[in-house]
Amino acid sequence: MSSRKLAIVTGASSGIGLEIAKLAAQDGYDLIVAADTPFVEAGPALEGLGANVEQLEADLATQQGVDQLLQKVADRPVDVLVANAGHGLGHAFLDQSPDEWQHVINTNITGTLVLIQPIVKRMVERGEGKVLITGSIAGHLAGSFQAVYNGSKAFVDSFSAALNEELRDTGVTVTCLKPGATETNFFHRAELDDTKVGQAKKDDPADVAKAGWDAMKSGDPAVIYGMKNKMQVAAAGMLTDAETAKLHRAQAEPGSGNE
Image 1 (cartoon, helix red, strand yellow):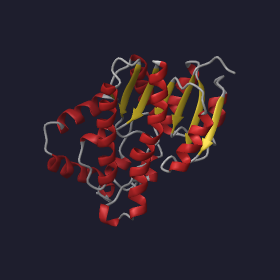
Image 2 (tube, rainbow, N blue to C red):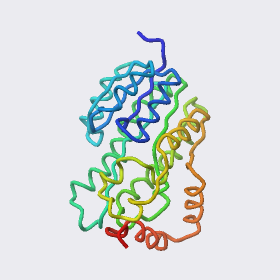
Image 3 (cartoon, rainbow, N blue to C red):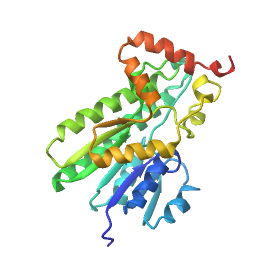
Image 4 (spheres, rainbow, N blue to C red):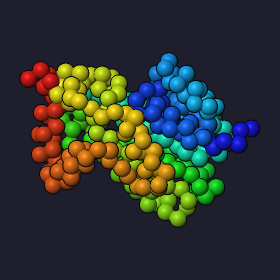
């Protein structure tokens, strides 16, 4: 059995998740990586960093997908859990099918919590472990035309802070990474290509991942990447939900990128 520490990274086939997995491998962790899309580029990229990498293609919005991941972990001690799997969804709420918005909730909230609870229980029993959860600055904004997504991230941001406080003095820390718009497949999958935010210049996922990984190693409760994003969150804190919803419309309303 390997003497190297073990990190689990979800949503690791591309974007922020893949970049975090690379950082974990460079820091000497073996990896279990999971995603609902194939590891076409991620597999070779991670194997080349000297880590033992186990891949799982599964939908972590489902109990079956989470169970598959937990079975792969088995009774091995987990040193780091990166709960990064997420699903976005653009367009007006009334135009979304229940299957679509339920999948957002089941990925971002339900599946994330179902995965976190058993792993963190075992971390607490051992008296050590680190958790990095990908929230979003979207959780600070009422998200017109991304209403369910932003609402789900508000839950994640809040849950992460609450769990971290509950775990005080256990040796286990929870850090919430709150990215802004980042250059990943997120916007295309969420059908936001024709929006202002979909077409705007975005942050580099490698930079965002480094900020999250470093904050997790330091045991920080949360980190917002980038001054622009920090200013946006600060401004949102001084506005009502109705006002942030109006501002969000200008960025995320279908067709706004063509104006």
